Image 1 (cartoon, rainbow, N blue to C red):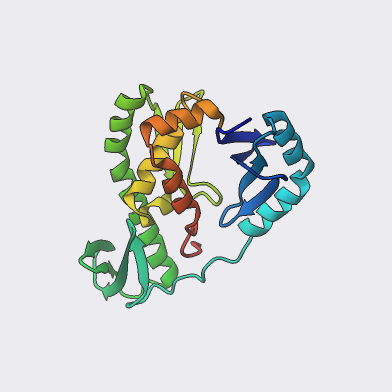
Image 2: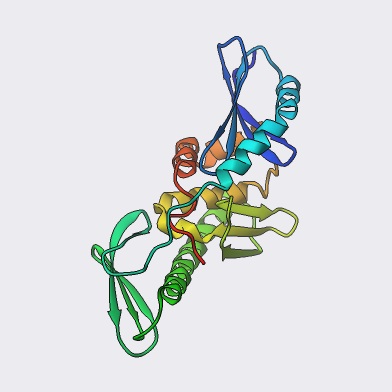
Length: 240
């Protein structure tokens, strides 16, 4: 009887597998980015589950495409009073027109944005996006240093960029990591989880039992953190 939950990768899609005392298998696709979860009877082995997922691939891909194409929250107008998130905290935008270069500060409950007079909302969004990228870039070095020592793997390069369907990714061959700029809006625990997740892939490429066991060792509460992050919107606004 199977009791250990795990992961499969089928046609490039990561699948969470949860064994339960049930008669029939259930395959679900969850928002916001189409996480696939299989609830399987304890008697089934990995091959049977993989076959069932392969048979449902057309449906799974259709559901994922619909979720990933779902309309996002409307584009921010970048005016005083709007809500914006910084490291999980909701701040009110305070816009000031003044000469000189654009500048942003998070002060108390305010996100203070100073821009040259006449800058349009698209320009203001670009300033904010650049600031978010700098936040993630500043937060990553100490986290990577910390987890290199714990995991025992060296990160050769890392980049912060816009990603439509992932919070992070990695290339095990080059030991390169990529992080979603949107993580600057989430609680810092989520960024650390993504760092650990991607660095663990340097030791184990697939989401198999060994990967789950390693994650259990590094971050015992990683599943709850993962579910919290996957339950969040990938982007609060549509960047242009």
